[in-house]
Image (cartoon, rainbow, N blue to C red; front, top):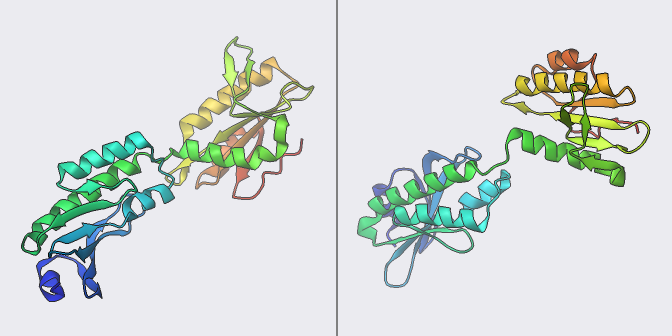
Length: 245
């Protein structure tokens, strides 16, 4: 395996790993974490070169909380095949080529890898889903007293759904709404919706304790002030919520 020839023929930073293998770091950032996409180049018997990500692309996607299902793996594999590559059962992007065709093969490999990385990034949970999961894990300490998605009837007659409830069948139930941030700021449509929900619930049920949990953000002070007359407001900063119940 002629490392000098390979290095001079490819765009990127090439590192020799062994007599028969090397690693090329490209200039292309992955969608999931911004790290530069790379390729392992391995000489196989007969002189064929194998180009592979060694599973890094989908591992990075999974680490960023992308949900990778069998049906999604099929979609990733279709993308790989469209670009002349393949995707193994354990999630490795693979492409074989002769050394003389390596530059063109690398172009196809990076097209496949970038496209798969882009699609996998869309399979990450939304900011709201992620925050709900985090708050649900925090509130799990209440055990059987915790109920997901409880509903009550507001003064308007509408059914009001909250993210979590504690002691919903007791004398003083607690209804909790979790409000996530996106790109460093609160999602104000959700804040306004929560405010209206709290007003409707409070007018119908004086026995309710209403709680808003805000994700820490640049404008969390404004969000807290907006909701403070309607509910108990807590800002989640990674520590257990001080909800006494």
